[in-house]
Length: 409
Ligand code: CTP
Image 1: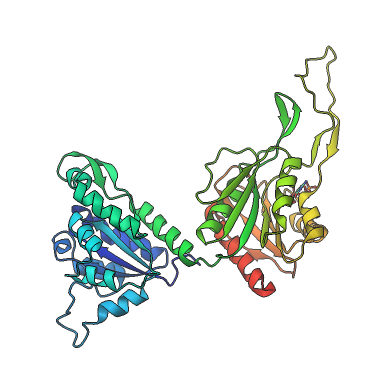
Image 2 (image 1 turned 60 degrees about the vertical axis):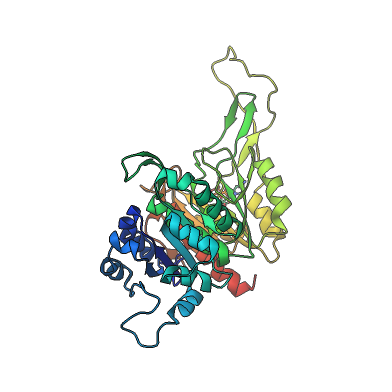
């Protein structure tokens, strides 16, 4: 399965703090994400974790010395390894190593490799230590030097520390460290860097009066997952979303809208500059003909009729205008799904349509998982097993990337 870390080398420097005991699990998570992990261990780190454990999980020899005793003529290993690194991660980073990195001391394998890193290699430092050591002006000044140098400092968390005291200084959750590595590697040179992707998400709301509206059950989860994944892979992302209860994805330009007409305006304003447009929104097909300015009161009659007019089909309009853009639609169907999806693919002039069934368990609105099939305009059906929307977002983007490589977009 393709991930941002696939084939990338994470050089992980481990220093002598108690949190070092967690690092075999960190290595395992990085490996699971597809990375090749090369571990560097300082002498004090060996008090907390063994080279044997780390060598076993990383499946690479662990480097502990600048002059390895058993390999002849290999003292330039730090230069070669530094050049192979996609990212340099120090976790946990002690106050001592932070000071050495800040001031350019090179008295062990970790600090040597740090100095030999090409300037393009991103550096992430995860300090972990007792609160007093962390808040000490010397440590803070050293961290500031590293920050100014463009390195990423992952702030430690607060909680119970190994000393028995409570305060700031705990290593962040390992998954948060892996997320940061992913984000940094993707941003450094993601496979979607240079692309502008316009994504719509969520439902639209069509007003009836100041207190009522017509809408649908769309949660926006699929569109938000797509936006977040595209951003992590280096794209410039504009997310046009109807009303949802989701936090805006970091680094994404979020434009919130209410109605289908609002959504159309915002999308069309940005269409020309987009390389890829993915319409994951559940756009209401109809709106109320005349929206009441005042709250509609209960009539004495038993029934009540609303006159609806058709909303524009945003995607169809884009399909008519499209030049170089790759246009992807979504189809939510309950019956004759392939046939209906193909009709939409053709009538909206799309490059592909992502089909999901509304009535399958674990698919459709509100849930975190989905079952999708991609129908490309060139024919065929690409099937995917049920998976998290976040996972499927990457698969949809992989597909867009292959289309864009074919079309030279
Ligand atoms: N869409 C759109 N504008 C609309 C309706 C739909 O841009 N007014 C887009 C959706 O975002 C989706 C695709 O068209 O990407 C298909 O939407 P869907 O609701 O499945 O189909 P409709 O075309 O609305 O047809 P129907 O409701 O009859 O199934």
